[in-house]
Length: 354
Length: 216
Image 1: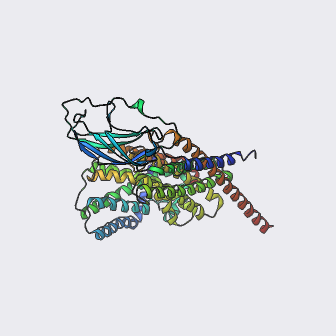
Image 2: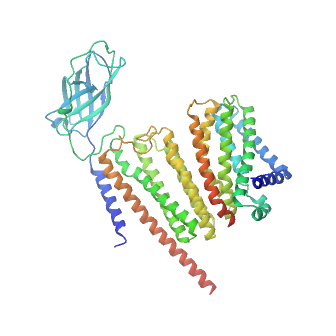
Image 3: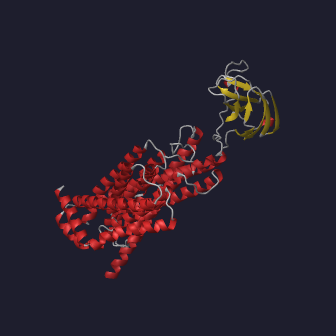
């Protein structure tokens, strides 16, 4: 028990990740509103669809269009259809402060049950008269908003509920990287100390990392089918991930193609170091140079500060730790299996010659 | 440096005593270019870039990956007893680099004969070709020795070597596209620096690992 506490810890963390990651709801959000454009000085009736809201139960419902911090208008009238659908009518003023003759507004829906939800660039206003300044603005709405401190994951357009895949897909890749680091360190130790122990460790961790890599690709592909519409796209990170797997499948091929144990260990260690070095440009440098379809992208491959909020972090970081611990456990079992089989092989040889 | 030069000179002399082997490589380039041309019949710039890179890669596999191969078996003992492994590796890399660069250049010239468009930025193209040759020769020379030491078949080592040069090839593809005038990129020098950095990392790693591999 004393030596196995980390296995228990890993399992507990993974239980926490699966339960909390699957059960915690999303924050309210606005799925869509139409129409998208209106001329300045006209009325617009927006048909709005929201997500995870309780519009028909709300008593204090406010709908705003925000052009900038000091240019906000309130809805003239509204009509609630059910808990997720409503229509709202706005009087768009003719005078809006804007650099060009087109301005866009953020739609904000706020009530006391759900708190605020917003949709950026919900309405584009054209034909703005820039010469005059208006006095229809209602001023700062921030005191009027109902701030909710519920523990809920952020609502993101396109991604919706699949934001939960962060805890599995992304965390699996991170855990894979951690396992590969352990593996390459053991390869280096093997090159220095020439002890077969390190070769066993390195091989075990690489094998588990390959499994994690396959799992990472599989979770990513399922996610991509629902958000991008295809299992595989020409995205840079997908290709780099495929190459990473090729590198390590080649490592596995190299190991199985050599019979002599010492040669196998030495060559595998060398190739492992080489492959890890190739991994750094593949997974870290090149994706940062190219645009990607991945969330949080546009030069930033992993986690942009805006994309990962604190509620996600509370599950995402434990997920990485839990999966790494699980991977270590799996590697540990594989290493022990290898040790036993090589021991048995030696005994067999001994008994044949005695 | 003198020792390295003497190894290069020896390689050169030995290769040119069997001149048919060198001719075979150039013929390989010619045949492949012709096959590529006949399969497409027209070679617009996009296809040209892709075809060039693929044939170049296979030329690299054929020349460099076999550089410690069987036909050099009798030289190994000589090198083993006379030269230090680092010198030998440097000489091999340099020799392979020159050979690959020449082959790549002739490949470009032959393919340009069949192509409708030309290369707009020759200095950029040549620098990309040079760095690509260097990168491929650095990685493949090392993997070639791995393959000799393990005595297994050559398919395994093509599989090992190809993903290792992939970052190299991707950057080459991008720089080539700029040189061909397919895309406009004012920051192409960043890619060149990155390519150089990747080659440098592989190079220093090979230098570190080569002696222990060679002596075993």
